[in-house]
Image 1: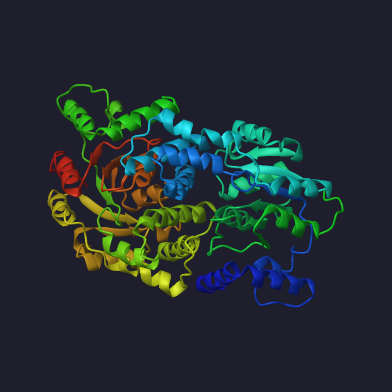
Image 2: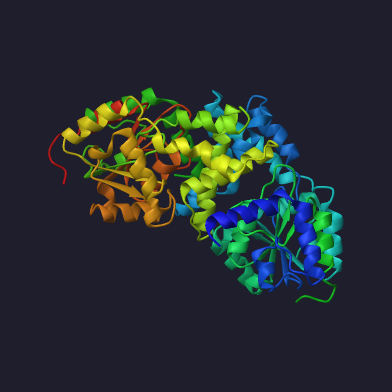
Length: 276
Length: 276
């Protein structure tokens, strides 16, 4: 496909979840729908069970709302600036990565919060910036998360987290959210000192779990994370939380659902036989 | 320095341009000021003349205002969303880079404009998105740019552009802005298919001009570009245009001025002897 065709296909897929699901149903019925992901067209994996599920953490499992409140307060009561801050943080995590540098995600978060504040005429001290984002360590899970994870675990799926947060950060996050026992391991990009969606992160994580890339499936509420995983040869499930967007120029994942419960339902349809 | 100390130093430097300039004056007078860049502390290059000047294009040389108008219109008359779109575009240029993928910067710009629009409930067609960003090909130079470039050229500096725009894009931009003849070459990241600030882009550009990294100086209105150049062993001059911010976690450049004329004035103080 030309880039333009890929974009058209991607947009069509993103714009119509119903159409996408109808297409999926078509596959199950043995028909060939017009709108299917590249993976599905190849018929390689869509009906098979992935060997390991990798869960993104922030926003995917955990609700950022309580941090959003403190960040908006630090920006002078401007909740409308939150997407700009979060995007600036993600941008600079990659600025560091492509510049052969690494800082803790929280440090980058505080520094970029200072940048956004400064552009609004607000001088934010280092301490104030760190304080504003400190609630990230004690975020509650989204209400749809724990039941879904328990079902998937019961169905025999191997499950790990894979996050841009630091190792200490994700350890504390999972403990505070009461999710630690549901995962076999908690992988942090801190170990490779590159941020997602660098292709090496997915290669490293797959080897770490001793699973071939094509048997790995990322579950994430970030289009850029899904893009990176699919480009690295993984499978993907997008949790289309409010404000989340798939990247139109990337491959589209085989699962695209508005919450974790529905993502789990799709995965549970793939059978309950042991996956390791 | 610890990351926290670096941040403090960076913030202090960014927060007080006067202090920074006073520090520069101190160096000229042979004194050792407290606030100087890491390079200046080593005394390696700050008083020497760089062998080649690399100019970023968008926002640094050219005024994005006319594109901003059309983009804001495409977003339903929301000029406040422009920084979010521009940052999302930059983020996804790096998402592609770390994912071993490449698309034309304009294609990424249109795709990310669609994403930002969609989050506002606006469906933007491919054509409408491309149309909205099409003025990028015919941006005028900032009023301070042409006189400054002419002075630098007259002083014997080798000068090239180095941009994330495509090759055809920058060729057309320079022609429409009437700046083509002022530059020895127009380098586009399209040639290496990685976006700035990937360290390889600066290495490639330095080799392309046959100049060692330490003799290259980037002039840019983007803190992330300055960060990447300095991390790659280049020198830097920041054009602190409105809304531009240096990255607090990176090295700080030896020149930090609000417009190109003042950047040129600093460079012209380094003498007029031939630099090649």
